Structures are given as C-alpha cells and as structure tokens.
Image (cartoon, rainbow, N blue to C red; front, side, top):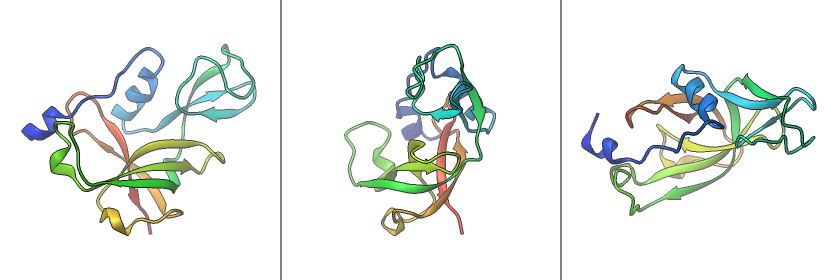
Length: 141
C-alpha cells in the first residue's frame, strides 16, 4: 500500500453501519432492508423511513448493478491521501433493486470526464486504504 493511500481517512464504522462494511470486506454489497414494507434503505437507519418500524430491519445482498444518477468530478483536494487521485469521480449510484435506492461511491478505472448520467455500472471492492474495503463502481458495457 502506498504512503498516500495510508493517509486517506477511513469511514466511520459504528454498530449501525458495521454490517455494510463487513459485507464489503467479503466482496458483497449488502443494503439495509425492511421485511415489513419490503423496501431497501440506504444510508442505514434505526427506523425504516417508509413504515417507521425498527424491529424489522435487517440486511440483504444486492446485485451491485446500477446506473449513474448524478456525479461530480473532483479536481483538487485538501484532504491528505486524496491528492494523487485527482481528478476523480464521485457519483450517486441508483441500484437496480429499487427506484431511488441510491448510494454514493467513486466510479473508477475511467476518465472521469467520460462518464454520463444513465451510464450502467457495477460494484467492485477496493482494499487500498488499509482495514476498510470500499464498494466502488466501474462502467459496464
């Protein structure tokens, strides 16, 4: 691992988000799911935002396929560890499992200026920052 990658901050992991990160460490994308209203929710929550229940929330694996819903290209960073990455693309990905099921991640392995809203993507997992595996996305097709 490069020195720059070691400087990158790790996401905050707590009891609520741990299943997401544990799943990613196994190479699987899991999203919180309410068995009462049968809706996914992301980011993780203590109450389902649809039916407002808490006792029916669990985690369910998803396909990792989606489309670019929105994005921005980052051209400069004041955060240590990100400088070698610029320019990079941060996107809101809409997963195929449910309309408006979004998560924010990088789209990698592509010219950041070559991505468009609606492009098909699929998840891959990046373990370059140490003890956390990050779900990231790549263009498909």
